[in-house]
Image (cartoon, rainbow, N blue to C red; front, side, top):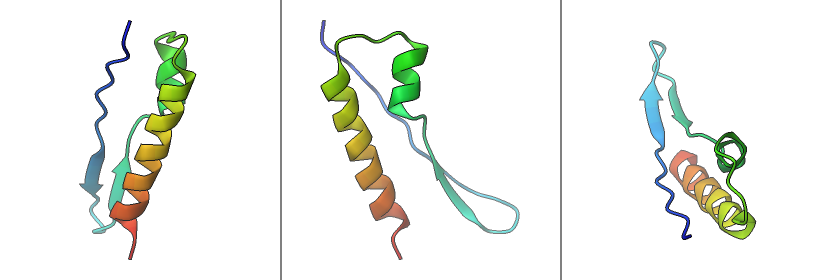
Length: 59
């Protein structure tokens, strides 16, 4: 069965004008939904999210 994984990244601003970027950790979702046999895919998703969040928050 293929892994179909839709990821959402939330970017928000608080009352002090501080901007936050957040998302659910893929390893947490793997455990929560009892996903088996997709360790490589989950690792790749984690790497991609890290790269996206690093680029989005770079100054």
